[in-house]
Length: 264
Image 1: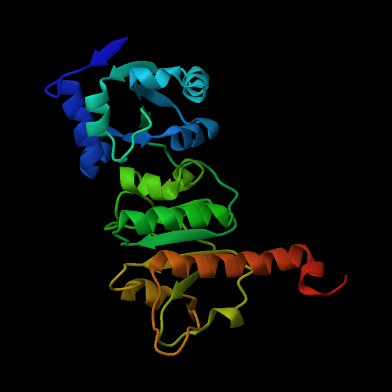
Image 2 (image 1 turned 90 degrees about the vertical axis):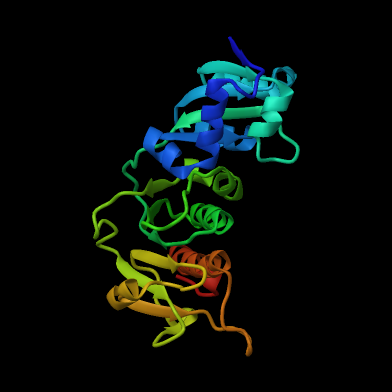
């Protein structure tokens, strides 16, 4: 079992680069996971691990022992000082893992989400978590968006990335044959007037600029969320939650018409 004590250790410096630099993570095809919940999500979804990175004291915790036994991988121990430095949590759990960046796989998801240059990791992570909760597993990440596997994005997503099929490099029309729906204030209808039951690809845009003009031109449907007078926008992750769960409500009403007060 390898142990890392020194900050000058070459492999420790490589771990820091993977943590801090998206091009290094993407180029080397790796993801740095932290915490029992996120690591468990990764293992539960059948993704492979390269290494466990553990503070020796954490190995005494039963839940960590069980998790490490479930997923066979090389174990590297780090001193408490090195674990605190590598961690982005104020109170590290003592458990991290290096994993392979997952490749897209087939998914039966009826609906999809397209990420159009969302740049805040917290916003993207929350939006990915919302997508998974709404039953959407296909997510297309446009160039110019933040890395969905950055430590902060993983933390905001609470492990949702493990259950999603994330397409970072894809053909331009890979989201078809779904209808394309974009959110915007101009030339749009209220979301509650739209029929969202058919297969849909939602476009959620940049925090400051919104959905790009190119996506708006291509949209089959343009929607807005009716808001209180004086307010004209929502955080992109909050807006996505409203949209995706209105769609889920409509789809569930079809499956269970009694929920809408009607009888079949």
